[in-house]
Image: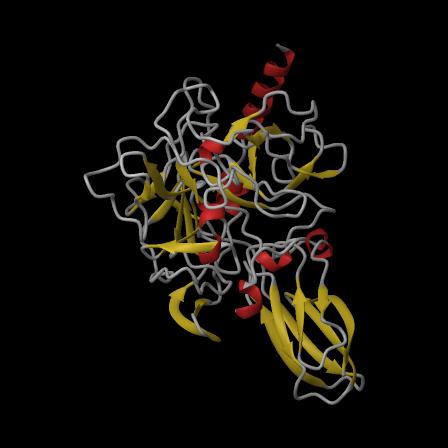
Length: 458
């Protein structure tokens, strides 16, 4: 009873947040410079400049809602999609409509669905685990989804075995672990680049260098990276060990585990369903969502998440506590089911994508100031070093403001400059035309130098 009273008190405190400090209004990555998206096409490692604005264009709000206008295009390069997906990321219309005062569901939780179930802070859509393909026992084949039309003989009888997009479509994800559906570019999973994982399971970043929304840092609480359609925030992979904000930083762990099965005849709750394909090299465990079961006897530590993939806890943005989802990864930082939200929402799903705003709203004016604490957390890394080809400069946290990169020789002469855009993590300096020797890379945000590092050109 005391725990319930505490949660109600914390939620009451949260609901009293002034509009100008509500993270559902203030946390978006705004495009203040006219930044446009870029994309790769298969076979060409030079990105193509698009004529579509990236990140978030504007945020408007009422007493109850936040309206986020974005084209769904990130600052990082999209594509290519090497599984034959003919689509490219294209501009999406409308507004993400996010509730400012999310409410816990008191009845049966609402299932997540195919299509948009939330938005990342750069205006890119979040999808759940599925890819729209399921097993049809009438034909013993996969049906539905892009490239998998309905099976002969009519629509699927029952979607007892829904294909998991993460293992099934990995070959079609770009470096940022995303892809488009009819132009709607989206992530199903933690939006950190493949090549930043501890164990790299896709070489697409090597062929087409790009990055993601943020870089995982196991030494600090992961940033707030999005909101689900029930209004509750979504964080990256790491958080405070204890729900009260103590205990240090740990990886948030999924409480879903693969079942110990060799045939697919029943769901984890014992329901007898139409048979799916036996477990095999073609259809390994984890290929279908129903291969997982929720383990309520997970170790009695608060870093294991609930059935919605979240928990009520203190976060840097919600110091009084909030229910928060986390993008789960395994010990190798590879995505772990259910990835972000799901398979059910914690709160009342009342948000959506709308084409017009039907109530009086105020336009939010974002600030451009960056706190000293945020700058200290950027943890700049440069690699390879030494190099005779290029230097990659990686921001080790979410970058909300443009970072200027300047390369100086030891006499102080500026020899090259570039930038990392907000909502991206990495920038490059060309070393091929430089004389061998020692240089200095200076990293600046809003005119403030946050890092000076030596690099060696071979």
